[in-house]
Length: 634
Image 1 (cartoon, rainbow, N blue to C red):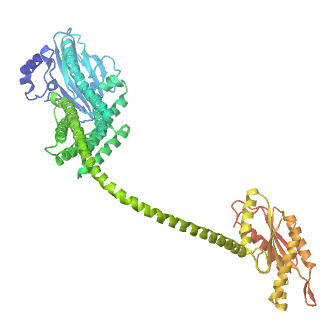
Image 2 (image 1 turned 30 degrees about the vertical axis):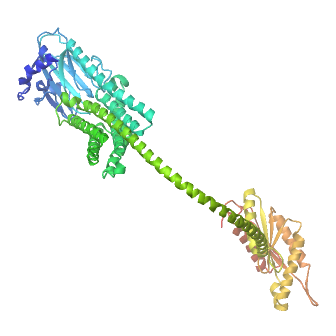
């Protein structure tokens, strides 16, 4: 530690000088160990990313850098860097460390003074199986210097999470020593985070308080995010899974926003306190959760900018909520405010580092880690104070509730005595009321039964023709629909005969309406006598028209039965006084096989067409209408 400080002290005048037209050459000397080499680098941008090493070397637009660590922010184009090395002792082992674990692709080229390519290597998180590199959290390249002289090092860098290129030189033994210190520090950092995480999960399991669970989930998401930042996940958890690593990196950051806002919302009771920006804060939370599920479809640049914007929006609104409800006598809120201020500072420093607004140094690289650790400790203390405070308030409220219950019990005992007397009086009244209700119920039941019988009789009378005693047209229509549907399901034929009395109008004109009614009654009796053995149903269809419904009967049998009816009636004269008037009828037969989607009106129409044709032809005849395909139209 002291030796590195002395080296920086000796070299700081060189590092703060303004950049010249070309970068200086670096001499391989032990004093250069651990010194950022940004001021010795030259760079150029390859917008298309297609330029080869020969094309890049031939370009004259190499530009020197004036910073220790190049940081171009979220720059997507490919960047080339060049470093000139003066090698005195080629036998001494040296290592090149790129202190940035999130480089996607890094191509390394080593050329001698004549421009001959001595070595070429491929590294980066998208090349986890690259050969020739040291297996490490960060890209480490062993320099194999074969001869003294000037060596040219070219680096082609692609990075979607921030274009940074901290380049350092190390002798092998010194690199091992400083790397062990870094790993020890990193292990202590993650160890403390894991201990705090397990502690809060344990408290949740014991106390069943949801704030501990929300805080533990927030910690777990941030720990996973830090594992991504340090390259630990790709190195140990899922080596070689590049796409998964990129998705988890962005998803863990968005998930930490969701869990952090959820925890802060419930910790501060923002809804109960009426925080004016609560809806906007919750919108940010749900956008972060939506982003978690949309990670596979988000581009890297869009995802990083979205993560930064949501982080800044959430932290800004949470800072406003903390100070909006800040209370000097509320210790949990004080600790929560301190923790959030520390985290906001760390997040802002990290965002400035990744977007190129802040330089890359020890503070900007580790600010968010230190802020996270400090925040977790402050949040844990705030949560403990909060839970203890809630328990004290709960006990106080319990004591107050107990006193109120005792007073309420004394009052209720008095009310119970009065209520007992009232219940006795109500019981007697209820018995009287029950007896009265039972008597009324019996009377209502008797009246209802009589009413039902009368209603049934009225329904039956409404379906009968008073003159002939046959079922009327309404009941006939009901039976037609039922038989039509049954025949359609069974696929069997059904027949309908419409019988009209030819002499009805003549009888009414000659002897009056009563004689006509007598004629209709006689015809009805004659038709019943003929059809009683054929499972037929007889209806008074119209004034002088009778309908005979014959289920399951074919057209030939129906036509024969209609002819029998016509002949039987023709043999029975109508006698009035000394005059015997011959009686004839016209019959129309409609026979079909109903279809599932047909209508019974079509069936009736067939029989009516046949009856009309029989009348037009002079009466005293039978006509038939029976389509071969049934009725499927209306």
